[in-house]
Length: 228
Image (tube, rainbow, N blue to C red):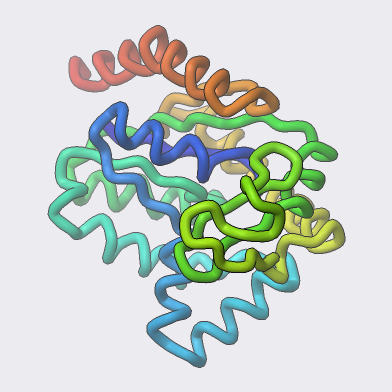
């Protein structure tokens, strides 16, 4: 099974991905994490990526496609996977379908987390993370036990440059401009199935809704694909 976890930045994809990964036994792949890993390995690339994110922009198709291709070539992806945050453009969507055909995978199922814009802005600007272990907190919905410090290692939390109100609005504008057509692409073609889920709920409620929709609609879609 190929799942695409979709939605605006701050919609909760990073929370749902590991839960779905464990439930379905699929590796969870985050394009944001792939970019951050690439930035750590190459200082020059890291500065360029940091600057891009700080301005609220998205990485180029070429960069993201190359990172994803390398990741999907790894052995743990041979029986399926979940991707968080990709595709973000119609070009990326087309590239992904070609890649899935090459790897002899079925068509993907896109799960879109619907969250109002103002809620997303509030979530993003309230987000902090641990610089050591990478744990993410939100002072509104998931605060640390000790204010300003990581629960796991007590390190002082930091806020990324792209987690400000101004940058959050820019990221949402970029997201809508590029990815609204991706939803239309999947919804109006045989590219895959699209499932909308209310992401403006508690994480466990969102997860329960996703599971229900998977059982009711997605598995039927997969069975149809296998019969075709």
